[in-house]
Length: 140
Image (cartoon, rainbow, N blue to C red; front, side):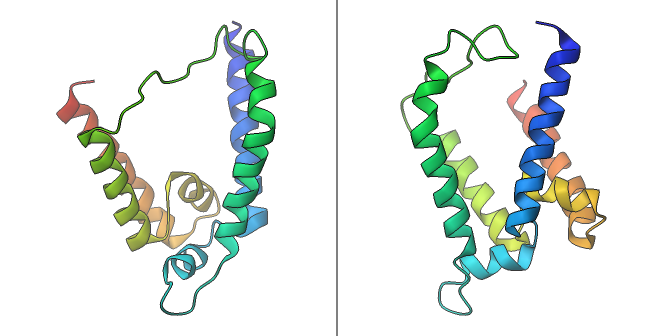
């Protein structure tokens, strides 16, 4: 596949994702922390954003997979894993803890970095260090 077309598709997808995050207000760490604060000042906005994403995926995913291949790739790359193992559960727990402490996950953090959010300016480097440590420890 043409690498410039693939790069363009990735940039366009990332920009669309970032725009969706910004329009929905999901780049604000306080909104995320408000969702996680179920005993305090609960903000259900994230629930509606996630619900919209899941509904869209449920409706459209079957049509996407009927195609012989993605538009900008030679084949679909779907995981064949069907079990919950220790690394998956540990990674999910660490992700959730980090998300709860910072109010950021990688997508909104990168959008926040683009607008020089003070939180993102410390979160993104810490995230990159964590990714590097994972590569070093897992040997991949």
